[in-house]
Length: 517
Image 1 (cartoon, one colour):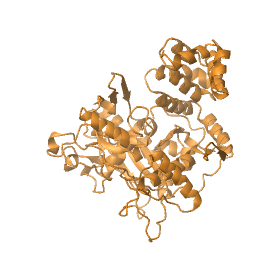
Image 2 (cartoon, rainbow, N blue to C red; image 1 turned 180 degrees about the vertical axis):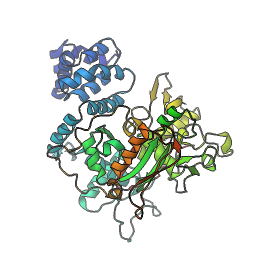
Image 3 (cartoon, one colour; image 1 turned 180 degrees about the horizontal axis):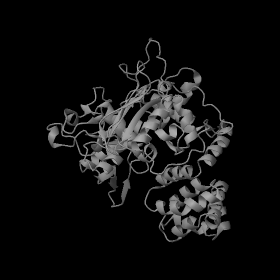
Image 4 (cartoon, one colour; image 1 turned 90 degrees about the horizontal axis):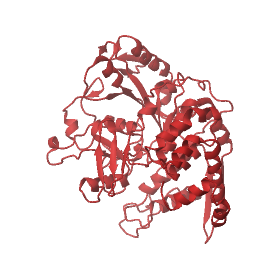
């Protein structure tokens, strides 16, 4: 158990000196501690024991309480001990995100209904604050909230130059006002006559729709399962909401051949392949340079060949970049929730610009998502300049060691959503009562071209798992010759699992400064 505030708050949670602490704290803080204490006493026995034994700290206790507050007794009986044990190994942010996914797997219908109730209470308020400022408070549907944030983030990065003196938070706040006052753009405050972002007499281009990216299994999207989906930058969402967003999305289909390799005993040089792209999702920068625009490396059946020239290029092809981001889900630093689509792609083992054959290669296994801040931190660590150490383990696990010796290992978030190990029965496939449409904040893209084929796509996937089928599968939408066809090399019992990344909207990642190599 930690000292300082943790020890003080622990006494309050145990019921010691409540009156004394209430006098020293705000009403809201005291209420939160009392509610937390009652929860530990009456609802979270495993969490209480772990906290009392010093196996988890107050931050993790609060994370568990927050995510389980509205859970039913049945869900608590199933998950509370599991969540408490998990909290001993990961940071509070990951506790919340993973526990949210587990709740949606255990009670998909209940979660969808509670989401609908919460969406009905959405609001926006503005209240006066001190010194001529105001507080804007809002509760929005998850996808709508991410749309707002991604729009503000894009404006803050793309509409001012690198010499603008404002912080990122200040630029996002100013961007919100710019959206509301009708100007629709920020004015750079660098003061330079030659500012590359200076406003000119040319018409302001029509803004693009903000990217809202979701990773979901094909079975869930087709209504055959109710496994939760991953909303980038937000976390787990229920299957019903994922299917609503999919009505407006562009799709990137990704297959997982891990199961096929296990069955056949064959060794492959790539773990998976992109099956079909029905529309481009957003791109982001790779290392410190803009996203790659060159064609993808040479492939066979969608799987990149080992030792191709693509591995010796600094910037990855579009296919590898999209897959690496889909698998990682978010920045791989502990506690960071920046979506992978808005992050750089960093070589895990450093790329050797002088002799590419001797350095870390540009492969899916050697690329990881890093937000700009943590990309710089890792670069300094690689140069032994900040006391940090970043170690890469098998299965895309990344270990971050602090200058004081603490260690934290992060794992990729995408596979749990794209390729769920345990199927959840489809109890919400027919929709949830009183469902409200999300509106037209998304770019419809070309999703409708594929939607009528989803059931056929998943049917092929399921048949692959029960009989002799293809080891590598591509899906071809041929308007002249009928519906989707499966093509590829045959292999006995080699099932191929399919995950889908949907990107609603189109947004380019803007280079916001150079990170060290």
